Image (cartoon, rainbow over all chains, first blue to last red; front, side, top):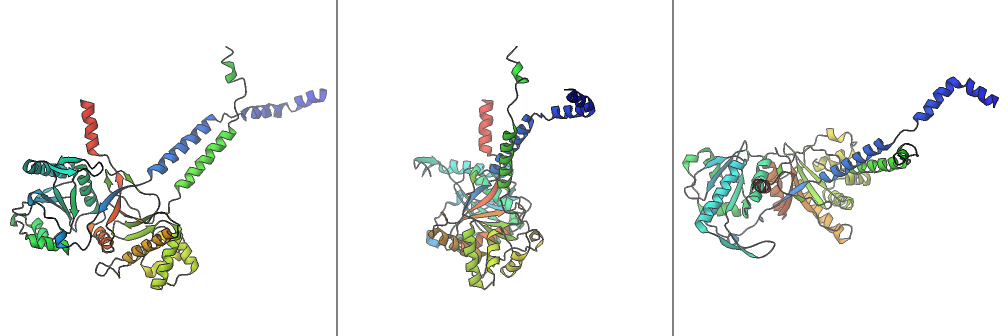
Length: 206
Length: 223
């Protein structure tokens, strides 16, 4: 006991330090676990967010015969020419077409499309159609949109145009190549568009 | 109060095991997140309101960069092996078995067929420096178009794997292009696909809010 006491006394200097070291080994692990779970949740969520969204696109087949093309009323057609610098040129129908331009904002392209839809609704009223999913007969008014991206446009323009189709719920739209006539039309809007329906169909089928 | 005392008095639960589990899970998620192949081509996709998700497996992705360079990527190691075997035979590429195995893991690639051997032999760390000019597209004759050859053979390979029961679905075509890609480059890709009778494909987009739904919320909020 004396020895112990002596040792206790002798090692007092060290003992004091040792004792405080022993006391500080009792770290409370709770914040560390908190951090761990926070990081786990973070990584769990970021891996699910990494899945990209897709937009489906269906193109017409390459060899369409003239007989298969359904004629469409000219006044229902809206043609969009996607130009350079995020500009959209548009005109309605084929005869006496006037070229106008707009941009991709909500006030721009969307308004143009919605206005056209209202115009067609006023002219033709509501038509019968079958809902894709529920197959129930419904009434609605439809326009046909032709999207023609020019060589100066960028991919974002095409995606934005297709997006507007989805937002405005346009059911009939196609993506076609810009014709030389239209390229001239953009450069010289006052010249008018001298479209020949036969040529248009030929261009589409070739 | 005797009820408060146990907080400090009685020994707390030993949290070591819990931290172990926490860090194990953390490491697991960190590693699974990194399992995507290295992106050789940085692509910033445009946004759209579409919310349809990309199917996890069975996709053939055509990547188009800012300058119009075309890369190709496809899922499924069995299919990739079958594809490289058939391409090797058809076009006498002279690949060794080891190079074929490298192909199954290389992720996206954008080099002409003549350079593929060299590309496969470069170290993964050096691959980003490899001059990736993209896969050539021939718009005049689709049979000569390297892109068309790759896609056509990839579809055949996947179909064969499906028949052998190694995969469940045929390939879903995916196009991933940068928002600033000039339209003619994308047009080439779309025309190539239509030429080999692929009319349905998916465009990868980022997510943005649907203005119709936003307006609905606003109206409800105001009314």
